Image 1: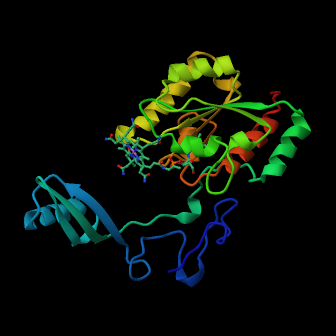
Image 2 (image 1 turned 180 degrees about the vertical axis):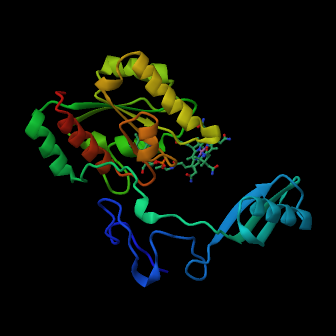
Image 3 (image 1 turned 30 degrees about the vertical axis):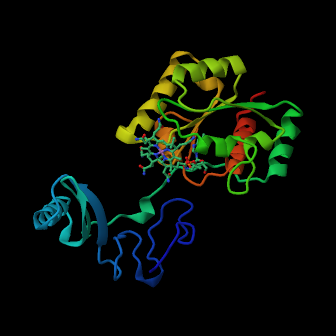
Length: 271
Ligand code: B12
């Protein structure tokens, strides 16, 4: 399979039309299964109907309605109680122009622990950046925010508590937005870190957007950096929701520390 990263294809700068290596036309990229440009995709879903030939045919018809061709049921499984699980292959006639794709990214450079501390102390001496973290709304999944904030950290990378330049307060699980902002004022927070793991009915989006609305109503939105993170979050989504930055799966504390310090220096604010 021809694997071309945007950087390898010279796409890090402005969008350019390229004919990639091994015959890949980056202006018309199609899904790849067995052979280049065959448009082959795999779909998995469940249907609330009993397992059997009718369930498989229902799956094929749904896939055709999605605009895909030649659906084939690769696997079907009885989930019990009138539900069927399906895996189908089909062909997609669609293509994307890869050369026109541009995704916003966190622009800070990933620095090591010592470089982060040095950058901070060079500007602010012994002052500290106060970071308030929480898992908000009904969400009780604290492992992610703990991984970023707690001393022991994540994936061999120590958490923000291990840095001299940060003062950390972790409010834990199921913190209402109102309480988070009250705590932020009382703590004199410079940065608020929110974790959202549960995404049912897009509750992560509505809860995060509500936090920003509240911060704007209380006229404190621009006084602090607002970061969010979780398995279904990304920097583009965070920007869309009014946050300064967003971090997805696999984020290391060092990446967050690098962003916080560089962004604070860039803004020219005093802690
Ligand atoms: C552990 C776990 C639990 C534990 C949580 C314990 C705890 N103290 O956190 C318990 C058992 C309590 C639990 C309960 C529930 N859970 Co649960 N749980 C999980 C599980 C297995 C692992 C989550 C985890 O710890 N990941 C590890 C961390 C390190 O990863 P992470 O959160 O993505 O964090 C990283 C990044 O995203 C990022 N990050 C995260 N937050 C932030 C914040 C900031 C600011 C930054 C910068 C970065 C950042 O950095 C982290 C490190 O890289 C997942 C399934 C899975 N395998 O992911 C289900 C899962 C999240 N749970 C799920 C569900 C449905 C529930 C329940 C609703 C189940 C129920 N019916 O009761 C309840 C909900 C309780 C509640 N009110 O929230 C679903 C969520 C589905 C969805 N998309 O909405 C999942 C995906 C399981 C599934 N496949 O169905 N759960």
